[in-house]
Image (cartoon, rainbow, N blue to C red; front, side, top):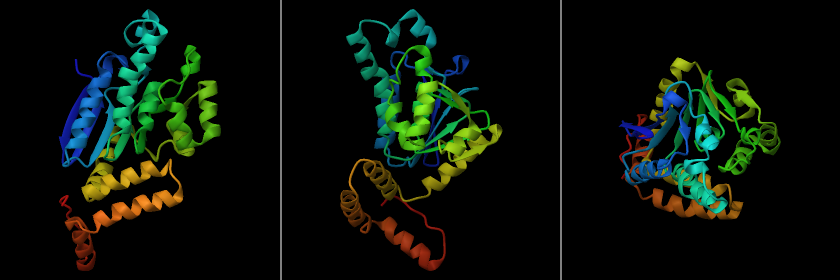
Length: 265
């Protein structure tokens, strides 16, 4: 069965991790290819302006497949070199695909996001949580290290000290704590989560699509470059935006005191 349920409506693509019967584990053979194909298609489709990522059933994702770990099978079996390649070619392929999405991603965390599931949630540009959401990077409790990029991204979101606390204790935090720590931007009633995510995605999708993609890229590049380099990147991107029809539409809408309608031209 496919891992992802994919729906596109009104410039928004919703990716639902759809293994609800087992709390949406990740890392089975082919998961990386499926995520990569979905994300590549989104990047090529200029009609898509925002992505919602969520989980089916009661979990966002419980992380790696514990049964496969116990059996040392699939992505979690073989020799050390083979295991390394399995991570690179499957799990890390999935993560790189999500990280490489050129449009904003809203992670709508509907339940537990544990281990790899937490790392996936952190790849959302915006994260909103239901009251039933929980977050944990519990790798050390399994005798493992955080192997899915979490040591790179989580400290950037919640800071070194709090990330270290989660990594080194394996503790799981609830939605209220995640909000307090800045891991999510809002917590909503469980039954309202998708409605809230869709409403937020609609606001994002109402923005000019080329400027939206460039803005995400500038935020991404800004993590790694100097301020002078960030200004230089912005100057070059802004020069392109000034020549778009969407820029004129935004200016006209402001002057005429009406809502803008951006067409991606």
